[in-house]
Amino acid sequence: MRQHTSFQASWLAETLRLREALWGPLEDASEVRRARAHGQGFTDRVLLRAQYLGKREKLDQLIRKWTQGARIALVAMCCLALAGGAGLALGALGDGTRPVNLLLALLALLGLNTLTLAFWLLSFALKSGGGAWLGEAWLWLTHKLARGPDAALAPRALMEMLSRQRALRWLLGGISHGLWSLALASMLLTLLALLSARRYSFNWETTLLSPDAFVTVTTWLGWLPARLGFTMPPETLIRISDGLHTLPSAAQGMWSSWLIGCVVTYGLLPRLLALACSALRIRKTMAAVGPDVSLPGYAELRDRLAPTSEQAGIDAPDGPGFQARVQQRPGLHHLPGQAVLAGIELSPDTTWPPSPLPASVADAGLIDSRAQRKALLDTLQQQPPGRLLLVCDPCQTPDRGTLALLADLASLADQARIALHADTPAAGGSAATRRAAWLDMLQAAGFATEQIATDTAAGLAWLAAGAAGDEHRGDAHAAS
View 1 (tube, rainbow, N blue to C red):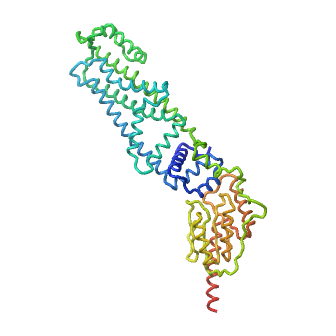
View 2 (cartoon, rainbow, N blue to C red):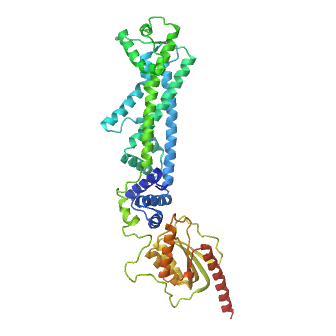
View 3 (cartoon, one colour):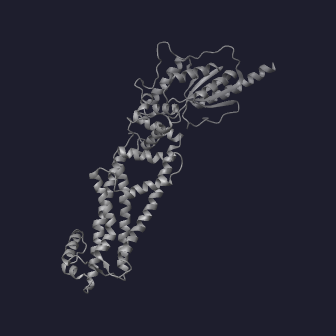
């Protein structure tokens, strides 16, 4: 697949589709011609059209601006997650002046994290998109940071595109898991720092539960961390950690290891696993994502971007005998020394003029719209030039409308030539095929072989030299 068939290209195409659905189709004659000239299939041409129109309408800048805002929002939330994790650790352990209730500390450290993770897992069974609240908060914050009348198009296009691929929940979930992982990592580092710098005493306190219940809960919670190498206090130590007995000096170290093991095992590791699953799913989706060409806005483009009657780059005449022809018009008084250069239906990013022009050559600019064509025809009708050079793009398919315009313009000049010029030649053998089609159709329109230049520089030299010679002859004739 071509390099522009990427996630960014599909996102741009979806943004353009939404804009045209809301505010009407854009004028895209030039972009459609370029897409048909360089695209290899309908989907490829849809993406190329979106690329050209997106650059013209600055939708690509809109996406880049929104992406920058989304990154700023994510960085801000990462900083809050780091601060929140450290704050939870400080709140759970306190300042060391009072004993730490183990179950309350564990609930403060992992309660909210476990609850949100459970809701996220439950959302799969309920087929809902809940549980990724931090991801939704990030999306809300990016909406607040975006500004401008079209600011909502980029995120809406992204959400709709990912929703169709069933990947939106994974994106929001991945952001939520990433933020929770940062918070838990910050919490863990803060716990290690506090336990290394201060002396804490741990116990369990209960009014209703028996010591046997606390032993059962502690043993059950400590089983998995013990498999990972964390210390599990023995049953005798658990029973006497009721705040009424004096504990040996090694007891606080065992409880510290048990608490840290629970945070790692039931907090950080599940979040990292969920983050990895989300990241893999998002990466797979983004690699395979593409525009759904059956959607309204895309389907209507099929007849224009991939017509069923399209033939090998040549727009054939409707019937026998149809062909635009160059016909010299009697009664025209050509201006000696008047030379005109014009670019016919070139891409907007074409370097123009191709080279610096002498003062004797008038630059008519790039002619693409109907109004520009009419204006140029009217100008040349009133002031017929001595020489006229028309520059065309051989990478685009020659059609009847273009050939009729070239024939009309050439008929108004004393001498006319066509220069086939391309800033970006087509790849493969399509360039030679289209150039041959141009030569055949131009010759059929009445242009002689010497009137068709494949080198723009040679055509410009002919134009400038002829303008100077015609002007000199005109001055000599006036003097005589």
